[in-house]
Length: 238
Image (tube, rainbow, N blue to C red; front, side, top):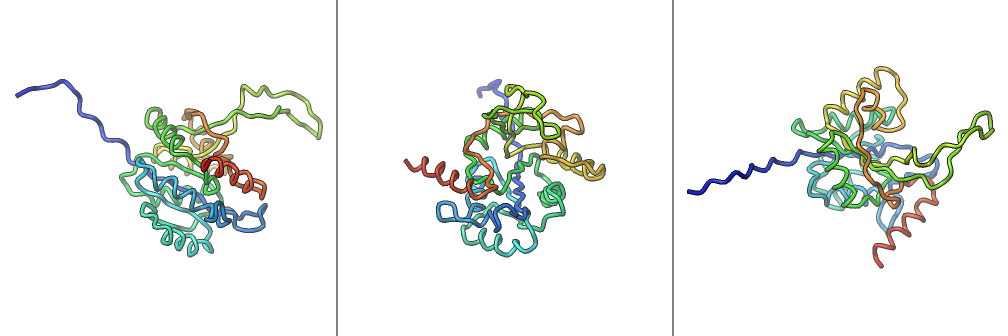
């Protein structure tokens, strides 16, 4: 009998994705997640990206009460088997994300939180962000800011902000499940206003690893964004 010194490979952490899809879409004048992108709803693209990813086990969609039925139908129509829940969100994004976290299975170790309105996330970026989070505990993609940035006060430009010191953060933002849940509970209890989910863990002293994001991973907010998303999507077909 031969013996080796090779260590047994550790199983990868269990991962769930929480997709906040509870926004009112006031700037679009209609539900932007149901707008067609390449002839299918925006939300379909978003869910599909994580449905296809081998490291993702479960998906939870959090939405407004009036969207539960149409989103559930979308999940059924497109055969998304990883979507475990389509559930009602809360009064703020933090409340909605927390509702999604509470719906995760007990054995879920890491949670990726991804905007429902970011339909063009690539498999490579999902892998990169998850891998960084597995190693460091928390990770999020960022992209350099292209425009010059100024500090404005009382309608006047008062200072430059060096571009090399700032970045635009994207999603998925990935955290240890218990850590982000505790951080959001604390932020809500303190009445803190959060710009994103990273801000919740930053409040409790957790550093978030930045990975290189993708400009195509844009968030659809205005009608112009749909046009840009269509162009990005068309490039994949060339």
